[in-house]
Amino acid sequence: MAFLSLKNVSYAYPNGYEAVQDVNLDFELGESVAIIGQNGAGKTTTVKLMNRLLTPTKGDVLVDGVSTKGRTTAAISRMVGYVFQNPDDQIFQDTIYKEIAYGPKNQKLGASEVEERIKDAADICGLTESLQEHPYNLPYSKRKFITIAAVLAMDPNVIILDEPTAGQDRESLKRLGNIINYLSENHKTVITITHDMEFVVREFKRVIVFAAKQKRRDASPKEIFWDEKLLEFSDLKQPYICQLAAILGYKDVLTIEDLLEREKNEKHSN
Image (tube, rainbow, N blue to C red; front, side, top):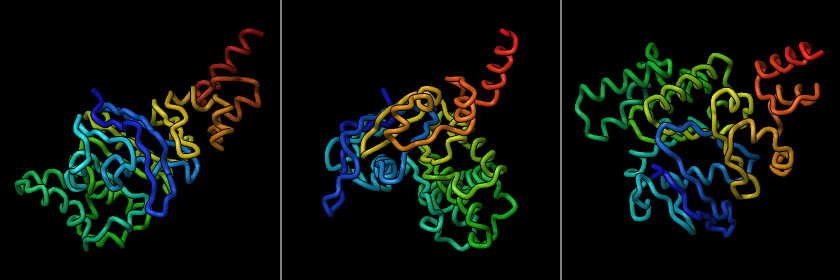
């Protein structure tokens, strides 16, 4: 049975605007999944339903087989952690150490367990040398790693990352990829919203496309990015390598390695 499930979920905001319609999704522990789509497609609303930041208007969300209805957001956040798109919406302590420590301390863990979690989260997020700094002494892109570390320190089963790649340099993107791989290897589910298609190709084996308030396809990156009708309907672009491959007349190419192999085979056939 899936650890996290959305069953015929819809959500309408208080003003009556329906942002998500009849979504069904299942996530197993250890999966890393990208959710893509244009602004307004329903992505962020959907992931906020996963940890009860929002409550479905229709349908149900199940975490470890139990409905989130009637349970507090705090209780669900112990199992499904959410890293906001804007770190400034999440940071509220005066040192990075305190920010990371807040969750574990509120879980009533022992002092040694709290320290171990702070150390591990700071290490994987590249914050070990900055723990006594004020969070706002770090640039915006680095503050995103503070909020990631704060959620990781709570050790949830599912981690939702909302646009973690925005504004990140190559080194930070590599660190994000390492974090996602580390979590998956440790049987955590990582669900990532991103507009960075190259990052999606590099880091994910499962991609979910949202458009017009609904899930439109759930498949591998290759299946998604060579589905021309889907991309047109969803107003999404192929990764650059796919675009180059299409110009050269190749289909189903997803990476530079794929493209070089096709070119090599083409030369040998001639």
